Each structure stands twice: as C-alpha cells, then as structure tokens.
Image 1 (cartoon, one colour):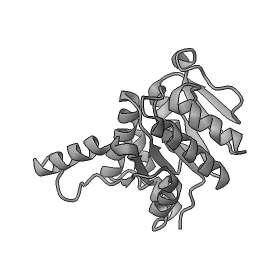
Image 2 (tube, rainbow, N blue to C red):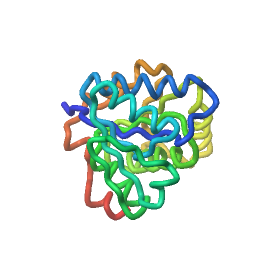
Image 3 (cartoon, rainbow, N blue to C red):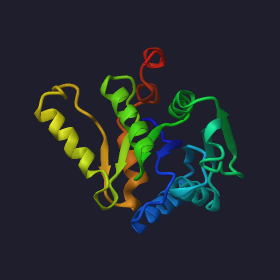
Amino acid sequence: MAEINSICVYCGSGSGRNPAHVRAARVLGRDMAERGIRLVYGGGALGLMGVVARTVLEHGGEVTGIIPDFLINRERMLEGVQELIVVEDMHTRKRLMFERSDAFVALPGGIGTLEETVEQLTWAQLGRHKKPIVLADIDGFWSPLRDMFRLMAEEAFIRPGFEVRYTLVREAEEIVARTMAAAGPYSEAELDGAQEPLERM
C-alpha cells in the first residue's frame, strides 16, 4: 500500500470572503503537520497559500515552496520554509509539484487553482497517474465544477471509461484522512503512473 508523505495543496493567493475557507486552510495545515506530511505548494505568503504554509510550520511540519521568479514579488515569497525552489516558468513549477507530491488537495481559489487542479484531473483521466485528487468543497465551493463534470458526461464529452476521478470532501477535518484512504488501494508505483508519457504532455 502507498503512503502519503507529501501533499500538494492548490489554493488561492487571496483569502476570499468566506471565513470558512481560511479556517479550512488552518485545519489542513495543522492536520498535515501532526501526521508528518510535507506540504508542497506555490511558495507564496499571501491568502490561503500563506495560511496553510504558516500553519504547517507553526505545528512543526515541513514545507516545500515552488515559485516562478516572476511571481516572487507578486505573491510575496514566504521565507522560513525548509525548502524553497525558484523556477523559470509555470510549467516547471507544476512539473516539480507533481514529482514531489503523493496527492493533491484543492482548497478554494481562483483561475490558477482551477487550472492546476484540472490539469491533474486530466492527467489522471488519461491514465498518467493515480495519485489522489481531493476537492475540498468547503461551503459548496467546488459544487459548480462537479455540476460541470456531470453536464460534460451527459453531453458525451466525458465518455464511459474516462470518468473524472476525484474525492469530494466537505469537512476540513476529513481532508487528510480521506486523502490517505484514497491512496490505500495502490502501490507507490501505481500512484506515480507512466512517467515518460507524462513528461511529453
């Protein structure tokens, strides 16, 4: 059985309007640290990104931040993390996030969060990996996306055998446990999937 030693968290560089989203970031960061799970994230100090990273650090956990050089000032790169990697572009950032993570959690966020999450869903749909992908549907944030997936299936744009596979979690306290459970049936090799085809995508 595969172990979850690191989780990539996609989330907003803003905090949003709903206090429940900030609370979820804190709960997730605390739970990851207490279970010894490393955070892999976008490297910024602002918004939910900063909240989850600082919470991991406050509870004695470890953090890897990966940030493109052009975002260092815009997202205010978080100092004090155990590992901070500055890369040239977004493609390199996303590739390293994939390589260094055993699973993915999407907290609420904007277009960037959506794009990164959907990319992982696409790779999984095409059989490139089986790493757990968890949508933290705090106060129904991701429900419209779930509805869109249903519409795509109804309209035959998502065909049988190519279903979008993810875990929807509505309570922040359940995110880590459900992520670990989703990895349970697989070996580490199965989670990582077909690396060579992934590199060409």
